[in-house]
Image (tube, rainbow, N blue to C red; front, side, top):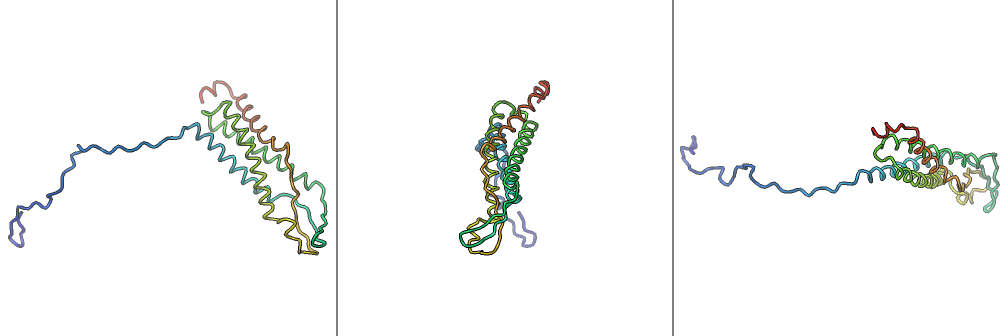
Length: 200
């Protein structure tokens, strides 16, 4: 190689040490990722979505629950102005909301996940709907307490009034959500033609 400005000739190759990749090198083997079974993913997704929907709906229910008005007479006594149907209204909305959500989720799962249709999904929807109803009650009670406080918070507020949400013991109402979920899923399968089921 000749450098034109200096007139110096050199046989040194500036690219010594570099080799051309002819593609003959053995590529490194990548460790394959473990894949989650698709059906397991569907069941987990149904559980996650159900709990999330019920939790959000429970918070809304807790914030909108009808309340009693209590008047603090002294540090240990408070009189409550009982309004008709206040406790029943909160209970009724609990039953309606959890039941409607369960039926809607079951129908969506039936329509959107044809590959998972069967008795196992039917049972799974009953389980997750019952769990959702419990989450609905927990988040609803918590949000209601955050909004209105507890009676003990007003022990020193003599002569003032405050709102208090009546306690709810759902009892058999917790069974409404799983019942409607199973019923809706079964009805959807019952009214769907066999040809459509086989096509799916």
